[in-house]
Length: 496
Image 1 (cartoon, rainbow, N blue to C red):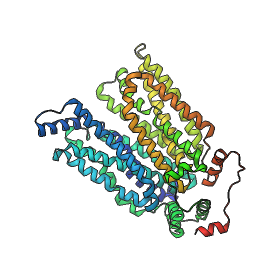
Image 2 (image 1 turned 60 degrees about the vertical axis):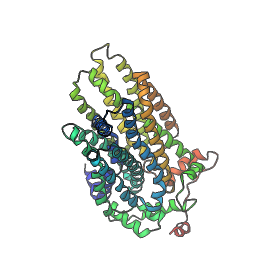
Image 3 (image 1 turned 90 degrees about the vertical axis):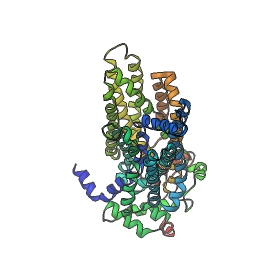
Protein backbone atom coordinates (compact mmCIF):
# COMPACT_ATOMS: atom_id res chain seq x y z
CA UNK A 1 0.00 0.00 0.00
CA UNK A 2 2.84 2.40 0.85
CA UNK A 3 4.41 1.70 -2.55
CA UNK A 4 1.24 2.67 -4.41
CA UNK A 5 0.73 5.74 -2.21
CA UNK A 6 4.24 6.90 -3.00
CA UNK A 7 3.73 6.25 -6.71
CA UNK A 8 0.38 8.05 -6.63
CA UNK A 9 1.96 11.17 -5.15
CA UNK A 10 4.97 11.18 -7.43
CA UNK A 11 3.05 10.36 -10.61
CA UNK A 12 -0.18 12.19 -9.78
CA UNK A 13 -0.06 14.07 -13.10
CA UNK A 14 0.23 10.78 -14.98
CA UNK A 15 -2.66 9.15 -13.09
CA UNK A 16 -4.86 12.18 -13.66
CA UNK A 17 -4.11 12.14 -17.39
CA UNK A 18 -4.83 8.40 -17.52
CA UNK A 19 -8.32 9.09 -16.16
CA UNK A 20 -8.97 12.04 -18.47
CA UNK A 21 -7.82 10.07 -21.51
CA UNK A 22 -9.95 7.11 -20.52
CA UNK A 23 -13.32 8.83 -20.14
CA UNK A 24 -13.17 10.20 -23.68
CA UNK A 25 -11.23 7.34 -25.23
CA UNK A 26 -11.74 3.61 -24.78
CA UNK A 27 -14.56 4.22 -22.28
CA UNK A 28 -16.71 5.51 -25.15
CA UNK A 29 -15.96 2.34 -27.11
CA UNK A 30 -17.06 0.06 -24.25
CA UNK A 31 -20.09 2.21 -23.44
CA UNK A 32 -21.37 2.10 -27.02
CA UNK A 33 -20.94 -1.68 -27.21
CA UNK A 34 -23.28 -2.30 -24.25
CA UNK A 35 -25.69 0.62 -24.02
CA UNK A 36 -27.73 -0.41 -27.08
CA UNK A 37 -28.78 -3.77 -25.59
CA UNK A 38 -31.27 -2.52 -23.00
CA UNK A 39 -33.31 -0.07 -25.13
CA UNK A 40 -33.33 -2.22 -28.29
CA UNK A 41 -37.01 -3.17 -27.90
CA UNK A 42 -37.95 0.48 -27.33
CA UNK A 43 -36.03 1.64 -30.40
CA UNK A 44 -37.71 -1.01 -32.55
CA UNK A 45 -41.11 0.09 -31.23
CA UNK A 46 -40.19 3.70 -32.01
CA UNK A 47 -39.28 2.74 -35.59
CA UNK A 48 -42.64 1.01 -36.00
CA UNK A 49 -44.55 3.96 -34.51
CA UNK A 50 -42.69 6.37 -36.78
CA UNK A 51 -43.50 4.18 -39.78
CA UNK A 52 -47.19 4.18 -38.86
CA UNK A 53 -47.11 7.97 -38.44
CA UNK A 54 -45.62 8.40 -41.91
CA UNK A 55 -47.28 5.65 -43.95
CA UNK A 56 -50.37 4.77 -41.87
CA UNK A 57 -49.42 1.11 -41.54
CA UNK A 58 -46.98 -0.95 -39.40
CA UNK A 59 -43.55 -1.68 -40.80
CA UNK A 60 -43.02 -5.18 -42.19
CA UNK A 61 -40.98 -7.54 -40.00
CA UNK A 62 -38.28 -7.98 -42.67
CA UNK A 63 -37.98 -4.20 -43.11
CA UNK A 64 -37.73 -3.68 -39.35
CA UNK A 65 -35.08 -6.37 -39.10
CA UNK A 66 -33.13 -4.77 -41.95
CA UNK A 67 -33.32 -1.28 -40.44
CA UNK A 68 -32.22 -2.58 -37.06
CA UNK A 69 -29.26 -4.39 -38.62
CA UNK A 70 -28.27 -1.14 -40.34
CA UNK A 71 -28.39 0.72 -37.02
CA UNK A 72 -26.26 -1.93 -35.30
CA UNK A 73 -23.75 -2.38 -38.13
CA UNK A 74 -23.35 1.37 -38.78
CA UNK A 75 -21.41 1.56 -35.51
CA UNK A 76 -18.84 -0.95 -36.80
CA UNK A 77 -18.60 0.77 -40.19
CA UNK A 78 -17.97 4.10 -38.49
CA UNK A 79 -15.41 2.48 -36.19
CA UNK A 80 -13.52 1.06 -39.15
CA UNK A 81 -13.42 4.45 -40.89
CA UNK A 82 -12.32 6.15 -37.68
CA UNK A 83 -9.48 3.66 -37.23
CA UNK A 84 -8.27 4.14 -40.80
CA UNK A 85 -7.94 7.89 -40.33
CA UNK A 86 -6.27 7.82 -36.93
CA UNK A 87 -2.69 7.06 -37.98
CA UNK A 88 -2.14 9.96 -40.35
CA UNK A 89 -3.93 12.54 -38.21
CA UNK A 90 -2.15 11.51 -34.99
CA UNK A 91 1.26 11.77 -36.67
CA UNK A 92 0.48 15.14 -38.25
CA UNK A 93 -1.43 16.94 -35.49
CA UNK A 94 -0.52 15.06 -32.30
CA UNK A 95 -2.58 12.91 -29.96
CA UNK A 96 -3.86 15.68 -27.71
CA UNK A 97 -5.27 17.82 -30.50
CA UNK A 98 -6.84 14.77 -32.17
CA UNK A 99 -8.52 13.71 -28.92
CA UNK A 100 -9.94 17.18 -28.39
CA UNK A 101 -11.33 17.42 -31.91
CA UNK A 102 -12.71 13.88 -31.70
CA UNK A 103 -14.97 14.94 -28.82
CA UNK A 104 -17.03 17.10 -31.18
CA UNK A 105 -18.33 13.95 -32.91
CA UNK A 106 -20.12 12.28 -29.93
CA UNK A 107 -21.55 15.65 -28.88
CA UNK A 108 -23.16 16.00 -32.32
CA UNK A 109 -24.27 12.35 -32.21
CA UNK A 110 -25.76 12.82 -28.73
CA UNK A 111 -27.84 15.75 -29.97
CA UNK A 112 -29.15 13.61 -32.84
CA UNK A 113 -29.99 10.76 -30.47
CA UNK A 114 -31.64 12.99 -27.91
CA UNK A 115 -33.81 14.77 -30.48
CA UNK A 116 -34.67 11.71 -32.61
CA UNK A 117 -37.88 10.92 -30.70
CA UNK A 118 -39.02 14.55 -30.79
CA UNK A 119 -38.35 14.74 -34.52
CA UNK A 120 -39.93 11.31 -35.20
CA UNK A 121 -36.84 10.32 -37.17
CA UNK A 122 -35.18 6.93 -36.87
CA UNK A 123 -32.74 8.13 -39.53
CA UNK A 124 -31.20 10.36 -36.86
CA UNK A 125 -30.49 7.26 -34.76
CA UNK A 126 -28.76 5.62 -37.73
CA UNK A 127 -26.58 8.67 -38.37
CA UNK A 128 -25.81 9.04 -34.67
CA UNK A 129 -24.69 5.42 -34.37
CA UNK A 130 -22.42 5.90 -37.38
CA UNK A 131 -20.90 9.01 -35.77
CA UNK A 132 -20.48 7.16 -32.47
CA UNK A 133 -18.60 4.48 -34.40
CA UNK A 134 -16.22 7.04 -35.93
CA UNK A 135 -15.61 8.48 -32.47
CA UNK A 136 -15.01 5.05 -30.91
CA UNK A 137 -12.71 3.82 -33.69
CA UNK A 138 -10.68 7.02 -33.79
CA UNK A 139 -10.69 7.54 -30.03
CA UNK A 140 -9.65 3.98 -29.17
CA UNK A 141 -6.61 4.23 -31.46
CA UNK A 142 -5.58 7.71 -30.32
CA UNK A 143 -6.10 6.84 -26.66
CA UNK A 144 -3.95 3.73 -27.09
CA UNK A 145 -1.10 5.68 -28.73
CA UNK A 146 -1.32 8.51 -26.18
CA UNK A 147 -1.30 6.16 -23.18
CA UNK A 148 1.53 4.11 -24.71
CA UNK A 149 3.79 7.17 -24.76
CA UNK A 150 3.21 8.91 -21.42
CA UNK A 151 4.26 6.30 -18.84
CA UNK A 152 7.55 5.74 -17.10
CA UNK A 153 9.01 2.30 -17.85
CA UNK A 154 8.13 0.87 -14.44
CA UNK A 155 4.46 1.95 -14.82
CA UNK A 156 4.14 1.27 -18.54
CA UNK A 157 2.16 -1.93 -18.04
CA UNK A 158 -0.31 -0.29 -15.66
CA UNK A 159 -0.77 2.72 -17.96
CA UNK A 160 -1.35 0.62 -21.06
CA UNK A 161 -3.68 -1.76 -19.23
CA UNK A 162 -5.78 1.25 -18.21
CA UNK A 163 -7.03 1.27 -21.82
CA UNK A 164 -8.70 -2.09 -21.19
CA UNK A 165 -9.91 -0.93 -17.78
CA UNK A 166 -11.88 1.87 -19.37
CA UNK A 167 -13.27 -0.45 -22.07
CA UNK A 168 -14.71 -2.80 -19.45
CA UNK A 169 -15.80 0.09 -17.22
CA UNK A 170 -17.62 1.61 -20.20
CA UNK A 171 -19.40 -1.68 -20.89
CA UNK A 172 -20.36 -1.98 -17.22
CA UNK A 173 -21.61 1.61 -17.08
CA UNK A 174 -23.78 1.00 -20.14
CA UNK A 175 -25.27 -2.08 -18.46
CA UNK A 176 -25.97 -0.23 -15.20
CA UNK A 177 -27.52 2.84 -16.83
CA UNK A 178 -29.67 0.48 -18.91
CA UNK A 179 -31.38 -0.98 -15.85
CA UNK A 180 -35.09 -0.17 -15.71
CA UNK A 181 -34.57 1.54 -12.34
CA UNK A 182 -32.29 4.12 -14.01
CA UNK A 183 -32.66 4.81 -17.77
CA UNK A 184 -33.88 1.45 -19.05
CA UNK A 185 -37.50 2.51 -19.56
CA UNK A 186 -39.26 3.56 -22.73
CA UNK A 187 -39.51 7.26 -21.91
CA UNK A 188 -35.77 7.60 -21.21
CA UNK A 189 -34.08 5.61 -23.99
CA UNK A 190 -33.09 8.80 -25.96
CA UNK A 191 -31.30 10.07 -22.85
CA UNK A 192 -29.49 6.75 -22.39
CA UNK A 193 -28.29 6.72 -26.00
CA UNK A 194 -27.27 10.38 -25.78
CA UNK A 195 -25.19 9.93 -22.61
CA UNK A 196 -21.92 9.66 -24.55
CA UNK A 197 -22.06 13.40 -25.07
CA UNK A 198 -21.50 13.87 -21.33
CA UNK A 199 -18.22 11.93 -21.34
CA UNK A 200 -17.06 13.89 -24.41
CA UNK A 201 -17.75 17.24 -22.73
CA UNK A 202 -15.91 16.06 -19.59
CA UNK A 203 -12.76 15.27 -21.57
CA UNK A 204 -13.01 18.40 -23.71
CA UNK A 205 -13.01 20.55 -20.56
CA UNK A 206 -10.17 18.76 -18.72
CA UNK A 207 -7.70 17.57 -21.39
CA UNK A 208 -6.35 21.07 -22.27
CA UNK A 209 -4.71 21.21 -18.83
CA UNK A 210 -2.40 18.27 -19.70
CA UNK A 211 0.58 18.07 -22.06
CA UNK A 212 1.07 16.34 -25.37
CA UNK A 213 2.92 13.02 -25.09
CA UNK A 214 6.66 13.57 -24.37
CA UNK A 215 7.96 11.21 -27.13
CA UNK A 216 5.83 13.04 -29.71
CA UNK A 217 7.19 16.42 -28.60
CA UNK A 218 10.81 15.25 -28.70
CA UNK A 219 10.87 12.77 -31.58
CA UNK A 220 8.30 14.27 -33.93
CA UNK A 221 8.55 18.01 -33.13
CA UNK A 222 12.17 18.16 -31.82
CA UNK A 223 10.92 20.15 -28.83
CA UNK A 224 13.27 19.10 -26.04
CA UNK A 225 12.13 21.83 -23.64
CA UNK A 226 8.48 20.91 -24.19
CA UNK A 227 9.30 17.25 -23.62
CA UNK A 228 11.12 18.06 -20.36
CA UNK A 229 8.20 20.13 -19.08
CA UNK A 230 5.74 17.40 -20.01
CA UNK A 231 7.80 14.77 -18.16
CA UNK A 232 7.94 16.94 -15.05
CA UNK A 233 4.18 17.48 -15.10
CA UNK A 234 3.47 13.77 -15.54
CA UNK A 235 6.30 12.09 -13.62
CA UNK A 236 7.16 14.67 -10.98
CA UNK A 237 9.71 17.47 -10.73
CA UNK A 238 12.98 15.54 -10.87
CA UNK A 239 15.76 14.74 -13.32
CA UNK A 240 14.40 12.92 -16.40
CA UNK A 241 17.56 12.98 -18.51
CA UNK A 242 17.79 9.18 -18.65
CA UNK A 243 14.31 8.91 -20.19
CA UNK A 244 15.15 11.69 -22.65
CA UNK A 245 18.38 9.92 -23.62
CA UNK A 246 16.46 6.72 -24.35
CA UNK A 247 14.06 8.64 -26.57
CA UNK A 248 17.00 10.23 -28.37
CA UNK A 249 18.62 6.83 -28.87
CA UNK A 250 15.40 5.50 -30.36
CA UNK A 251 15.13 8.60 -32.56
CA UNK A 252 18.72 8.24 -33.75
CA UNK A 253 18.14 4.58 -34.63
CA UNK A 254 15.34 5.45 -37.05
CA UNK A 255 15.84 4.86 -40.72
CA UNK A 256 13.90 8.04 -41.50
CA UNK A 257 12.88 11.04 -39.49
CA UNK A 258 9.17 10.57 -40.18
CA UNK A 259 6.49 8.14 -39.04
CA UNK A 260 5.93 5.19 -41.34
CA UNK A 261 2.67 4.62 -43.17
CA UNK A 262 0.61 1.45 -42.99
CA UNK A 263 1.92 0.33 -46.37
CA UNK A 264 5.52 0.99 -45.31
CA UNK A 265 4.92 -0.94 -42.10
CA UNK A 266 3.60 -3.93 -44.03
CA UNK A 267 6.72 -3.86 -46.22
CA UNK A 268 9.26 -3.29 -43.45
CA UNK A 269 11.24 -6.53 -42.79
CA UNK A 270 12.48 -5.37 -39.37
CA UNK A 271 8.85 -5.23 -38.12
CA UNK A 272 7.54 -8.40 -39.75
CA UNK A 273 7.38 -10.55 -36.60
CA UNK A 274 5.90 -7.69 -34.61
CA UNK A 275 3.03 -7.70 -37.12
CA UNK A 276 2.65 -11.46 -36.71
CA UNK A 277 2.33 -10.95 -32.95
CA UNK A 278 -0.22 -8.17 -33.41
CA UNK A 279 -2.39 -10.32 -35.69
CA UNK A 280 -2.22 -13.36 -33.38
CA UNK A 281 -2.99 -11.31 -30.27
CA UNK A 282 -5.92 -9.47 -31.87
CA UNK A 283 -7.46 -12.58 -33.41
CA UNK A 284 -7.21 -14.40 -30.09
CA UNK A 285 -8.88 -11.45 -28.34
CA UNK A 286 -11.76 -11.31 -30.83
CA UNK A 287 -12.31 -15.06 -31.26
CA UNK A 288 -11.59 -16.36 -27.77
CA UNK A 289 -15.30 -16.92 -27.08
CA UNK A 290 -16.13 -14.05 -24.72
CA UNK A 291 -19.20 -13.18 -26.82
CA UNK A 292 -20.40 -16.79 -26.67
CA UNK A 293 -19.96 -16.81 -22.91
CA UNK A 294 -22.08 -13.68 -22.50
CA UNK A 295 -24.66 -15.12 -24.91
CA UNK A 296 -24.99 -18.43 -23.05
CA UNK A 297 -24.98 -16.78 -19.64
CA UNK A 298 -28.73 -16.10 -19.88
CA UNK A 299 -29.50 -19.73 -20.71
CA UNK A 300 -27.26 -21.01 -17.92
CA UNK A 301 -28.85 -18.69 -15.36
CA UNK A 302 -32.32 -19.85 -16.38
CA UNK A 303 -31.27 -23.50 -16.15
CA UNK A 304 -29.91 -22.82 -12.66
CA UNK A 305 -33.36 -21.60 -11.64
CA UNK A 306 -32.76 -17.86 -11.38
CA UNK A 307 -35.91 -15.75 -12.03
CA UNK A 308 -36.00 -13.72 -15.26
CA UNK A 309 -36.08 -10.46 -13.31
CA UNK A 310 -32.75 -11.29 -11.65
CA UNK A 311 -30.90 -12.18 -14.85
CA UNK A 312 -30.03 -8.57 -15.89
CA UNK A 313 -28.38 -8.07 -12.50
CA UNK A 314 -26.47 -11.33 -12.82
CA UNK A 315 -25.29 -10.15 -16.24
CA UNK A 316 -24.00 -7.00 -14.54
CA UNK A 317 -22.13 -9.35 -12.23
CA UNK A 318 -20.21 -10.54 -15.29
CA UNK A 319 -19.39 -6.95 -16.14
CA UNK A 320 -18.15 -6.31 -12.60
CA UNK A 321 -16.13 -9.53 -12.73
CA UNK A 322 -14.47 -8.53 -16.02
CA UNK A 323 -13.71 -4.98 -14.84
CA UNK A 324 -12.28 -6.21 -11.54
CA UNK A 325 -10.06 -8.77 -13.24
CA UNK A 326 -8.64 -6.18 -15.67
CA UNK A 327 -7.90 -3.84 -12.74
CA UNK A 328 -6.17 -6.75 -10.97
CA UNK A 329 -4.13 -7.34 -14.13
CA UNK A 330 -3.05 -3.68 -14.20
CA UNK A 331 -1.77 -3.95 -10.61
CA UNK A 332 0.39 -7.04 -11.18
CA UNK A 333 1.45 -6.72 -14.84
CA UNK A 334 4.56 -4.66 -14.03
CA UNK A 335 5.57 -7.20 -11.38
CA UNK A 336 4.99 -10.53 -13.15
CA UNK A 337 5.37 -9.48 -16.77
CA UNK A 338 3.09 -9.57 -19.79
CA UNK A 339 3.96 -12.97 -21.20
CA UNK A 340 3.31 -15.02 -18.03
CA UNK A 341 -0.04 -13.34 -17.33
CA UNK A 342 -1.21 -13.63 -20.95
CA UNK A 343 -0.32 -17.31 -21.38
CA UNK A 344 -1.71 -18.27 -17.96
CA UNK A 345 -4.97 -16.56 -18.90
CA UNK A 346 -5.12 -18.46 -22.17
CA UNK A 347 -4.56 -21.78 -20.39
CA UNK A 348 -7.39 -21.17 -17.88
CA UNK A 349 -9.70 -19.95 -20.66
CA UNK A 350 -9.08 -23.10 -22.73
CA UNK A 351 -9.75 -25.34 -19.73
CA UNK A 352 -12.91 -23.38 -18.84
CA UNK A 353 -14.29 -23.58 -22.38
CA UNK A 354 -13.75 -27.33 -22.51
CA UNK A 355 -15.44 -27.93 -19.16
CA UNK A 356 -18.23 -25.47 -20.02
CA UNK A 357 -19.06 -27.44 -23.15
CA UNK A 358 -19.35 -30.55 -20.99
CA UNK A 359 -21.45 -29.01 -18.20
CA UNK A 360 -23.92 -27.32 -20.57
CA UNK A 361 -24.32 -30.60 -22.45
CA UNK A 362 -25.11 -32.41 -19.19
CA UNK A 363 -27.17 -29.72 -17.44
CA UNK A 364 -30.40 -31.64 -18.16
CA UNK A 365 -28.94 -34.81 -16.66
CA UNK A 366 -27.84 -33.59 -13.23
CA UNK A 367 -29.67 -30.93 -11.24
CA UNK A 368 -26.43 -29.47 -9.89
CA UNK A 369 -24.71 -29.20 -13.27
CA UNK A 370 -26.05 -25.68 -14.13
CA UNK A 371 -24.37 -24.35 -10.99
CA UNK A 372 -21.06 -25.75 -12.26
CA UNK A 373 -21.69 -23.89 -15.53
CA UNK A 374 -22.26 -20.63 -13.63
CA UNK A 375 -18.98 -21.09 -11.75
CA UNK A 376 -17.13 -21.83 -14.99
CA UNK A 377 -18.61 -18.74 -16.64
CA UNK A 378 -17.19 -16.57 -13.87
CA UNK A 379 -13.82 -18.37 -13.95
CA UNK A 380 -13.63 -17.83 -17.70
CA UNK A 381 -14.50 -14.14 -17.37
CA UNK A 382 -11.86 -13.66 -14.67
CA UNK A 383 -9.18 -15.41 -16.73
CA UNK A 384 -10.13 -13.38 -19.80
CA UNK A 385 -9.86 -10.07 -17.94
CA UNK A 386 -6.56 -10.85 -16.23
CA UNK A 387 -5.13 -12.45 -19.38
CA UNK A 388 -6.03 -11.49 -22.93
CA UNK A 389 -8.40 -8.69 -21.97
CA UNK A 390 -5.82 -6.86 -19.89
CA UNK A 391 -2.51 -7.55 -21.64
CA UNK A 392 -3.24 -7.62 -25.38
CA UNK A 393 -3.26 -3.88 -25.99
CA UNK A 394 -0.25 -3.42 -23.68
CA UNK A 395 1.89 -5.86 -25.65
CA UNK A 396 0.79 -4.46 -29.01
CA UNK A 397 1.82 -0.97 -27.94
CA UNK A 398 5.20 -2.03 -26.55
CA UNK A 399 6.46 -4.12 -29.47
CA UNK A 400 6.33 -1.25 -31.98
CA UNK A 401 8.65 1.79 -32.03
CA UNK A 402 7.42 5.37 -31.93
CA UNK A 403 7.50 5.90 -35.70
CA UNK A 404 5.50 2.72 -36.41
CA UNK A 405 3.05 2.77 -33.51
CA UNK A 406 0.38 4.88 -35.24
CA UNK A 407 0.37 2.63 -38.32
CA UNK A 408 0.29 -0.48 -36.12
CA UNK A 409 -2.74 0.85 -34.26
CA UNK A 410 -4.49 1.40 -37.59
CA UNK A 411 -3.92 -2.25 -38.51
CA UNK A 412 -5.07 -3.36 -35.06
CA UNK A 413 -8.18 -1.21 -35.39
CA UNK A 414 -9.03 -2.63 -38.81
CA UNK A 415 -8.70 -6.21 -37.53
CA UNK A 416 -10.72 -5.33 -34.42
CA UNK A 417 -13.62 -3.69 -36.26
CA UNK A 418 -13.72 -6.27 -39.04
CA UNK A 419 -13.74 -8.93 -36.34
CA UNK A 420 -16.66 -7.27 -34.56
CA UNK A 421 -18.57 -7.03 -37.84
CA UNK A 422 -17.93 -10.66 -38.77
CA UNK A 423 -18.84 -11.87 -35.29
CA UNK A 424 -22.07 -9.89 -35.42
CA UNK A 425 -23.00 -11.45 -38.75
CA UNK A 426 -21.76 -15.02 -38.29
CA UNK A 427 -22.00 -15.66 -34.56
CA UNK A 428 -25.81 -16.16 -34.40
CA UNK A 429 -25.60 -18.80 -37.15
CA UNK A 430 -22.69 -20.57 -35.44
CA UNK A 431 -24.62 -20.74 -32.16
CA UNK A 432 -27.81 -21.88 -33.90
CA UNK A 433 -25.93 -24.63 -35.74
CA UNK A 434 -23.47 -25.88 -33.11
CA UNK A 435 -25.18 -24.75 -29.89
CA UNK A 436 -22.86 -25.22 -26.89
CA UNK A 437 -20.27 -26.99 -29.06
CA UNK A 438 -19.39 -23.59 -30.54
CA UNK A 439 -17.13 -23.25 -27.49
CA UNK A 440 -14.86 -25.88 -29.04
CA UNK A 441 -14.27 -23.62 -32.05
CA UNK A 442 -13.19 -20.77 -29.78
CA UNK A 443 -11.12 -23.20 -27.71
CA UNK A 444 -9.26 -24.34 -30.82
CA UNK A 445 -8.57 -20.77 -32.02
CA UNK A 446 -7.33 -19.70 -28.58
CA UNK A 447 -5.09 -22.79 -28.35
CA UNK A 448 -3.53 -22.15 -31.79
CA UNK A 449 -2.83 -18.47 -31.07
CA UNK A 450 -1.63 -19.22 -27.54
CA UNK A 451 0.81 -21.89 -28.76
CA UNK A 452 2.22 -19.54 -31.40
CA UNK A 453 2.70 -16.76 -28.84
CA UNK A 454 4.26 -19.20 -26.34
CA UNK A 455 7.06 -20.02 -28.77
CA UNK A 456 7.71 -16.60 -30.29
CA UNK A 457 6.47 -13.74 -28.09
CA UNK A 458 9.31 -12.19 -26.03
CA UNK A 459 8.80 -10.55 -22.66
CA UNK A 460 8.64 -6.74 -22.86
CA UNK A 461 8.47 -5.91 -19.17
CA UNK A 462 10.93 -3.16 -18.19
CA UNK A 463 12.66 -3.11 -21.59
CA UNK A 464 13.40 -0.10 -23.76
CA UNK A 465 12.35 -0.17 -27.40
CA UNK A 466 15.96 -0.84 -28.45
CA UNK A 467 16.05 -3.97 -26.27
CA UNK A 468 12.68 -5.13 -27.59
CA UNK A 469 13.90 -4.53 -31.13
CA UNK A 470 16.92 -6.74 -30.52
CA UNK A 471 14.65 -9.55 -29.33
CA UNK A 472 12.59 -9.34 -32.50
CA UNK A 473 15.63 -8.98 -34.75
CA UNK A 474 16.53 -12.54 -33.76
CA UNK A 475 13.27 -13.55 -35.49
CA UNK A 476 13.27 -11.00 -38.30
CA UNK A 477 16.93 -11.59 -39.26
CA UNK A 478 17.83 -15.03 -37.87
CA UNK A 479 21.05 -15.39 -39.91
CA UNK A 480 22.59 -12.10 -38.74
CA UNK A 481 24.65 -11.42 -35.64
CA UNK A 482 22.86 -9.02 -33.33
CA UNK A 483 24.52 -6.40 -31.20
CA UNK A 484 22.53 -3.72 -29.51
CA UNK A 485 22.75 -0.45 -31.40
CA UNK A 486 24.07 2.45 -29.34
CA UNK A 487 23.95 5.81 -31.14
CA UNK A 488 26.95 8.01 -30.74
CA UNK A 489 26.82 11.46 -29.19
CA UNK A 490 27.08 12.98 -32.67
CA UNK A 491 24.11 10.88 -33.85
CA UNK A 492 22.01 12.13 -30.98
CA UNK A 493 23.06 15.74 -31.36
CA UNK A 494 22.20 15.80 -35.05
CA UNK A 495 18.63 14.85 -34.14
CA UNK A 496 18.16 17.90 -31.89
